Amino acid sequence: MSRIGKKAIALPKGVTASVDGQTVKVKGPKGELSVKLVSEVSASVDEHGIQIAPLTYPHLSHTEIFDNVETFYKRFYFRAPKIASIVGEMVRSPQMMKRRLREGVEFFQFLRERHRAA
Image (cartoon, rainbow, N blue to C red; front, side, top):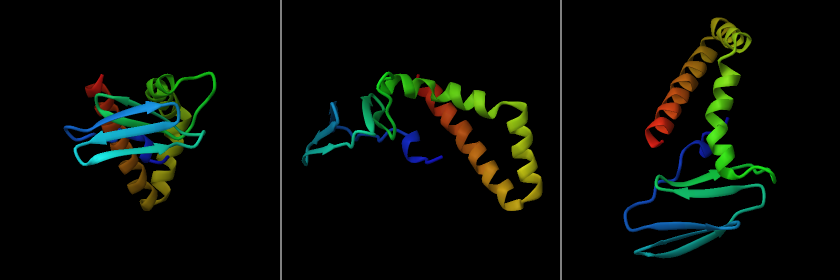
C-alpha cells in the first residue's frame, strides 16, 4: 500500500487551506496556490492538515472512507489465515521478514497517530 495517503499534509502556522469541489486552495504569508484534483482523487481539510484520498466512490464521502480505514485494516490483517500467511512469508525469506516487520511498525504508528488525533 502506498504511504502517501496515510498522513495528512501538515500546514505551518499562518497557512490556511480549503477544498471547493475538486480544487484545493492554500493561502499563506508568501502567497496563494490552488490545485485542481483529478476526479478520482478527493481531499479534506481538518485541524491536522490536508488529507488526500486517491480514490472516490459516488455514494461514500471522503470522511466516511477515512473513518473506516482503521476498521478495514484491523478486519483484514487480524484474521488467522492472513496472520499465518504473513508468518509463513517471514519464515521463508529474511527480506520479507524485514519488510513485514517494518510494515507492522508503520501500521501501529498509523493507528496510534489516528487515536491521538481523535
